[in-house]
Image (cartoon, rainbow over all chains, first blue to last red; front, side, top):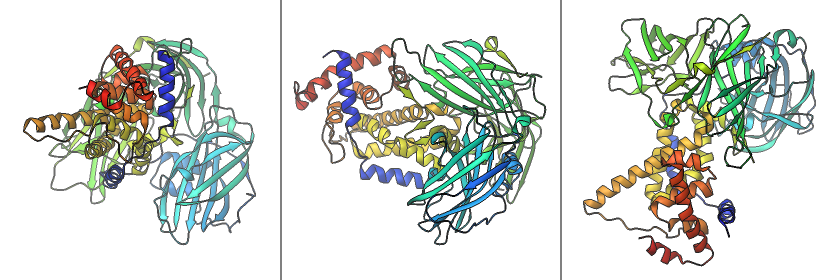
Length: 443
Length: 189
């Protein structure tokens, strides 16, 4: 046997060998999970956005099991979930169409309350009711997010969140990125939940949706602009500006993988736009196959201001591949004299403009100017007198105003006997590849 | 071969990492559950006692949870997690070396089978030299490319290749009966 044959033999053996985590280690994992620090709480959903139009939704009958009476306990789930002023949910709510169809199985009633769609996302809001209550927290239960099929083909897997309304009710939403394929004007969609709590069942919904008028709110451009980075050739294949999201879609081939790079996105006035999400999929990443280069498809989600830019500028950056294993280094300052100005990177300024603290918690308002990379979920933290980090609740940051790049970080109630510093992570591991920037016209 | 980075093991990796980065414990738990077998196997490849393996995994989970906000590329979650784990395992080994110097000698149960891991290849891996075990597990069990392994264990790619070369023949010989497990262990000492 040669090396390659032995490798194949060993890998096949490894693939078929099962190993079970010992009870002792399982118990330690379980114990650790139950005692995670609780200073950070669930995320407000990620993709910030604009507005959409989905006109008519015709809910068809789900085949089985039995239908319950409609249980629209909340007039609008999107409004309920966005009650704290979340911009994204207000947009979903604004353009959603009521569905209010329910399916009951095994004592659980799942109701699809609303649906909204644009060229980037299909979003469904739902509620789950159980008269006997729930044994588990369903707030991030992936079974509820399901997959979305169109004409029998899975077009996207869902991501989302839910929150407890009362002991018998959860309300949530699930969203599906559909920007890779141009949606037809009329869609036949299936949303299916196969498990609620610990109970397997069948909660299946079929919809026909027709988009009307979305065109005036959406723009899909295929610039096909190619550019080079060290070790990577990439092409901007598509830009989708739509009410729910703004997406840059990139195709890349890599002569070296992994590649640690990202993009800053600037509008036509040179203002850096807030990048609030990334997706990446790839081929041949795990193998060195002669003649088959690693390649990836990437989506970069960003928030634009009210005015549509005439063009976008992409500035690539690379970062230290070992960055993630190093603890973050914070720049900190007393919060007594505002504004506090941080320069965490050569091209970046973070200014703390306002701090409010009361019995219910604290808010730190700040603006971000210049180039700030995606991936720092937390831009603003507090450090107590011992240097312990206090992370914001509710997702770390919330964009208040895309025009001014003003953010707010909300914290749980602080200890009035302690003095806290405001702090932001240093960005000195970045290399900005200004010479490799490209312009993407949007006209 | 296609690798879908954002969907590993049936969950949406990108989404879960994004949620977990912002403190969503349920999303973080899903990530831990997805990766616990890998963590367990790698830790078993480095550490000798089950208690140490548990401690390393436990500490890795805590460090990952605290450090997650600084994870930049969601697709590298697993690589990042294993890197933390290996650092933890090495810390435990360093502490044990100090303990040994003070006179406390722990029993060496490397190569013994337990109820939990009677797998043939994994047992053969335990018979390898310390420096070969991790790269072997990462290459054969976790199916990671040499470049990634090089980054995780912080040695040049050439060193990873030479270690794999040494491990390959020994494993094959042990598994095909050309070399006994006990003999191999002695040969490695």
